Image (cartoon, rainbow, N blue to C red; front, side):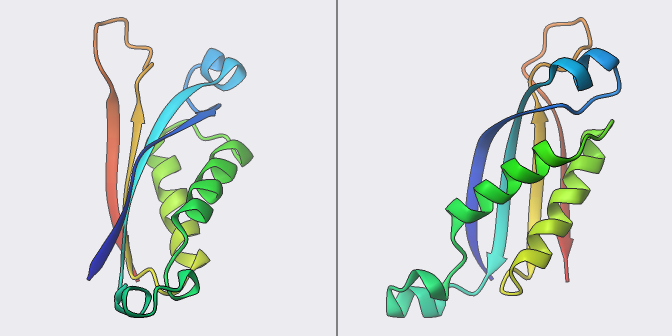
Length: 119
């Protein structure tokens, strides 16, 4: 399968276990790999023969702001389902949610969850 990659889309949203996280919000970085056949898009040079990654980025942002989850595991599951349902050409998706401001009280770059889902 071919791949379309979205790396580190920055979304400010209100997910977390602690009340401050859901009230104040924080930055999340979302990366996805969409698995699909891009041959027709490549041979025709037509956007409608592929999946528009800009539209997927808008979908991710809207979904992350629409509902609040306690766990980034739940955010990842929700996004994977929404993206797979959005376009039947996407046969598999890898989603990674990074939480760079994770409230653990220790120096850390980021905490993340990565999942892979398919039809």
